[in-house]
Image (cartoon, rainbow, N blue to C red; front, side, top):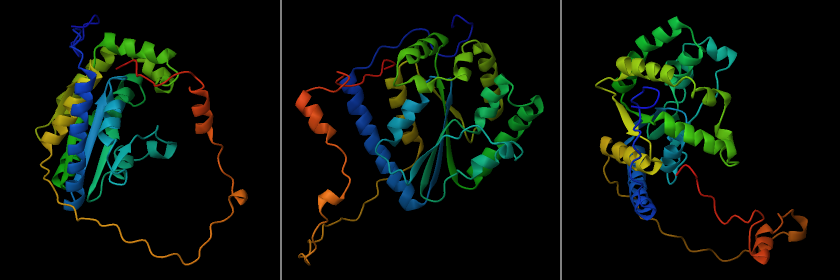
Length: 293
C-alpha cells in the first residue's frame, strides 16, 4: 500500500537487473520483434498496441525499445496532440480511426482513446456525460476492431506514487528530459487518488475477455520493458518467415561520369575532426546515462 492509500505499484523496490544481462535479453527479444514484424507484413495482419499508465511510468522508454530495430514504414508510433476545435466536435473515436493500421502494419499508440477515461476525466477536459458515453462505447468500438481482424493489445504501466515522484524530480534537473514534464504531469502528483479511481472505473468497463488489460509493473524500467515485450511476443501467433536471398549485382563499368567539383557544394564543417583533435566532447560528457534507469 502506498503512502496515499493506493495499492497501485509496489513500494518494495524490486532487485535491480544486471545491465549486461538486461541488454543481452533485450537484444534477443528485439530480434524476435523483427521476426514478428516480417510475419505481420507478409501475412497482411494488423496489430494495434496501446500503451497507457501513470505519467513517468515508462511507456515511452518501452515504445523506444520495441521500435528500435523495426521498419518505421511498417511499425509506426501514434502520439496525438491535443484535439483541435474541429476534432472536439467529431465523434470521439473518429480521429483515432484514421491512424489504425492497414494490412501488414503495426501501430503503437503512445496514449490513445483512453485519454478520455484518464486525464480528460480527472482534469475536467470532458463532461460527465462524455465520460459515461466513452465507457459505454469503448467496449463496442474495440469489439468492432477485433471482429474486423485487428489484433489489439492493451498495456497499463503501473508505478508507485513514490517512484513517480522520484522520476519527476529527476526530470526537473535533467536537461535531456525536462521536455517530458508539463504542468498537467506535475498536477498528477496532487491528484494521485483521482487518477487511481478513474483507472479502476476504466478497468471495470474495458477489461474485456477479448481485449484484456495487461498490467506491467514498472518500478524497475528495465524489467518492465523485458516483461512487456516478452508478453507481446507470446500473445501474437507469429511464425518465422523465410526471406528471399538477396545478391548484390555487379557494378557496371564507368560511362565517363565525373563528380561535380566539391568547391561548388556547401559541405558541413568537420566537427568530428575537431572532437578527435581535442580528445573530448565540448561538454566533457562521454555518454549519457538515464538517471531513471
